[in-house]
Length: 465
Image 1 (cartoon, rainbow, N blue to C red):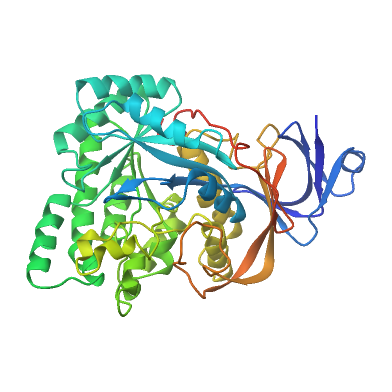
Image 2 (image 1 turned 135 degrees about the vertical axis):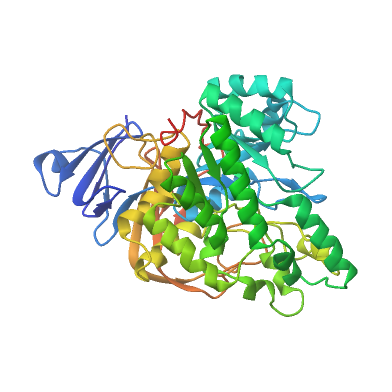
């Protein structure tokens, strides 16, 4: 059994900040011991000096789309390149989305994603299930998936003809989740109304990327959020709303939570740090920032930060779904509706949220809560993931809170030809990353390999019981 001690650092979890040494054996945390104590000094094996750094749990990114098909192309990160980039950014677990094809089964969709990921991941991974076809058969399959460790199901009120489920289908899936303990996730935008606005915008000759944000109105995000919340109440099921971007949608979630309903919300770094000003960048540059839900005017940011502080929003994930500017985003030149929806970010999340600590938006412990502990709890992975405690997997990051870096496509490790945060200076940087006690990043050098990452069957949400 390989033994390791990480000594001299400040251990930061969602609940504590303590100067302690972390003792690791067999890929798990055995104990936290006082600096210089007999037990720490006597711990034979590899010694990692964490002096001057934070010792934090590996990040849990609960919303990624590696190799996802969209609009006639595929997300540019494979499970190999995407999980390697995640590790560089201090994330040691992803939960990706397997997709049920229209007319196909949930099981076939899940099997296809297992085939993509198995043997290719640098870090551990799990799956959610996108339900594209809610029917009697797929509803029965939900029970089997929950028992097999796929305990969350995503449904869409957007993308008619591709992913959209009607209210009756969403209600049936929620009723099934209420009976089997699963968690329904929703992409909440009124896709039918948006399609009308897209058609009208194109007819007026409005074809630039900025119009993507204008047709996907904040009110249509709020309306769909309100609707799925009420459906979840009728079903008696918990609800998780993904990539919340609009202050009106935050208000709907806050109202439901104030009424005592098990409704949860996620936002993403792009909504916290970018805005419609990016979508309006000259030429076709705004295409880099096309994602759905879209970037909002900058005045929405304050509501998102407040929601994170007050716990009306519990999780920050990336919705990492990268498409290269050259050859992929360019599919929408002259027609913003043809631009593949998605942005890169799996490598940037932990650093951007640490910058939020530096800027005074978040406390250190809240940083770890929203990036590590809460997603692990939300999706049935805690305390195996998301914390540093006896019995937890030794997914641990040594983080230098004082190092400065400039984000750039020239230096990132995601398989995409641009950075959404090009030129942004941030304070804080990952130095060393362990996954189950094994170094993946060592002193800013990648020492991991494809196939180290293992599949994670998940338990039920610890928030939704």
